Length: 396
Image 1 (tube, one colour):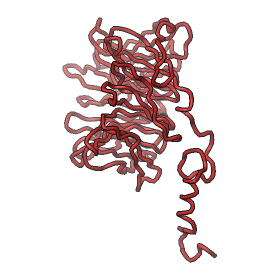
Image 2: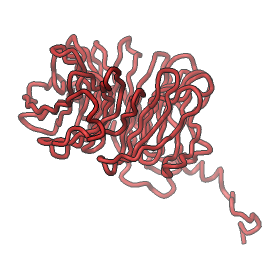
Image 3: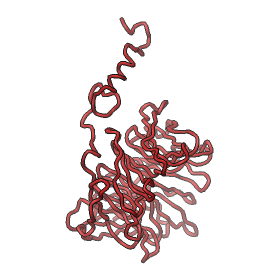
Image 4: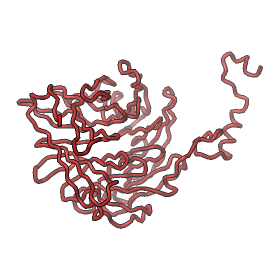
């Protein structure tokens, strides 16, 4: 197994990848009354598990292994019946903030360089789970690369040091030779990036508070940057799917979840999906479903929102805290401290809460997969409008 590239031979570390199996059936717990779904602990332990991400049935997270006193990255396939495969990526240093797309897992890795150390971005291909291949995405000396995200063949991360983080990306089509490129780096900080195909989003404090910015990175050598939400107070923690960006926003003095349609980059259309007077933070999105953590019941629960049906629903109601959710398809994962330590829990949603549009209907102006009086009203409002240039040819 090629664990380390030749150019990293000077680094004083040995990356270990371990495979173990464990009984999956014992992790099932009682159904949630909040949403009728059965929640389960993915890999219950007394170690703390944090920062989950999910793609399909594959879940990744960071785990503080008290026996060794450091963080490692764990990977679990919940589609397995009977025994569940667990992949452990780690060594004597920390591996944290994992993200996953298909068979590629990325994370930030604390790497020792002689007498110094910094955070680098690494990646593993788990196509063959018995022989996973590890690659270096970015390892600039004396520079921290952190908080990676991945979609398709693009990895993005925040790059720099305290006081001045920028956003960088890499095309990992050839994982042995990632092509790194610059995305955004104005004064102050650009942090917490997310990516979907050729669009990257991040939080940016260029205007002395946190705003949401994005860039079309189709041309790697010339990213086209634009503003998504640059209003008073803070907009933070963006996530993206297609032309939809979500984030947490304290415009009204508490954290709410906002959404923007960025299909028209010069005029993003934004709206709030929840403005409850308690805090709603850490949103994630996949297709038409948004999830977040919500404090309206005086503890953190996981809530969801269906952009198509425009309905909100509660996913968990355990009296302990459920935080930092992630979603892929109908699978939701989160951190949960109901057992006394933070464990990763999951649920597979079904039913009307996760209804999706089979195909867009001509005349559906508001995107709710049905034609009703709202669509007729929009059409009537714009009746006999014409945007042809030249105008005089409109009604010829």
